[in-house]
Amino acid sequence: MGAPELAILAIGIFVAVFAIASFRNIHLGVLMLPAAVAVGVWLAVPALSVETILKGFPVNILVLIAGVNFLFGIASSNGTVDLLIRKLVSAVGDRRGWLPYVFFLITTGVASMGSAQAGYVVIPLAMAAARRSAIDPMVMAIALNSGMSTGGFAPTSLFGIVTVDAAEKAGIPLNPLVLLGIAALASLLLLIAATFMFPSSKVIPMAAPGAAAVASEPTSAPGRFASHQIVTLGCILILTLSVVGGFSMGLSPDIGVIALGLGAALALMYPVSGAEGVKRIDWGTIFMVGGIVTFVGVLQKMGAVNMLGEAAMTLGSPYAAAFAIFVVAGLVSAFASTTGILAALAPMAVPLALSGGVSGWALMSLMGVCAAIVDASPFSTSGALIVAAGAEEERPRLKSFLTRWGLSMVIVGPVVAVIVLMLMGRS
Image: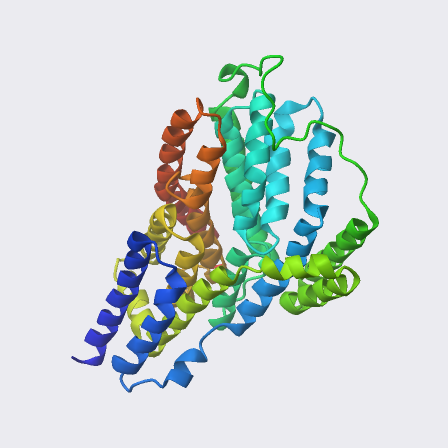
């Protein structure tokens, strides 16, 4: 076989590893990393050494995810996050119409703490609050998914980390705060649309007096923050100001190192919470992203990534190519890992972004949004958890509507994204 045929075979192996991991329920990183080494050693021309291949493992992403997980793991284990959520919910009071938007903000904040998956902790509380307040569970479901999508693209969270890292490696200027703003705007517009599509007062009656309480819903006013929680909030504030202030001034603060430093300070003051913080580092996600990025690095060295980008360009126009990339991102993400597809597609979108036919930073941002907004699908982890958190009588309707919503976003998202690209031109 020649180099082009071997590159195509390598892409086939990459896709096969995704499929096998999904169907056999095997951790993707466990398969991806050794597969990357095997492909690089046996298929690359000239052959790559194991040392060269492993240099592609993204240590900077490891430090960032571990640092943020560590800090916010401490905040979760010492009750700071839970009490903060309860205080925010209590502040809503009787203004139930604002409850989905409050949970959107809460979930955004929690999901910005390292991974969109962190927002999973809010799901039971939010769905219980929706039942008690006669909010249509569909509206709350979209609010939760929108919050996880938005928070996931924060500079401190995984979607944002992967997308910005891919853009930076390709020399595409992508401000992390701009990425976050685009994700927030798209998610908020979807939530507003859901509010009008599913008017809660016409769908679900108010919970009857004396109805059984849901354990995860707070029934009393939250107490005060303890001294250790105030210190924890101070560390979170320092991290936030460092990120926002640094990027606003055109700097590139190392979020992972800052978070590790703040977490270490908390661990010195509160060793028990520090030990819990270490346990909450998401090594599985780090390993998964590391495996994918390492394999994509091998594909890049083999010329496969440029080959795919050039193939997309043969569709006739850069907008058609962008539409194809957006649809693939959404379709795969609806059934598999959003983080995984972002890590895989972001480098593959680079040739199109560098072609000059479309705005590079906008292409990368919109691709991420298209991959994230489909996660309300009950076939994804977040959608499945939302359905499971609904009352038994709500679940069939939730599953049906979330299936339609999630799969419709596979097309609606890319169509709107391409229109935005066309309106922006090459800016």
